[in-house]
Length: 138
Image (cartoon, rainbow, N blue to C red; front, side, top):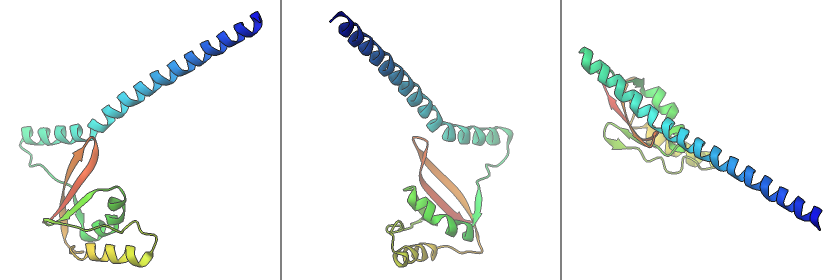
């Protein structure tokens, strides 16, 4: 009986050590995730602040209409709201398994784009993730 009790206590002690280690690792991962979520908006703000301080006009990224058209599906998969010249693109159904539906949705959304024009980008972040991306024709 003494050996069984001793084995059970060692098992309990081992389980407590493992659970404690998992909890500590989980807390550390949550802390690091929170820091990384705030890194993108912070870096963008710092870049804009430096440009403003040195007198350089803030330069937004720019993409051609063709580049935007080819990225619409990936933006929809990531649940990003896409706005082109003030009109929100309806990307519902882009994750469909039916190619006809997917292509129809992408064609309808890309019809708002001028493929030869260049668009400036404005990005809104929420908790480090892109919430909304706006493309404005130059």
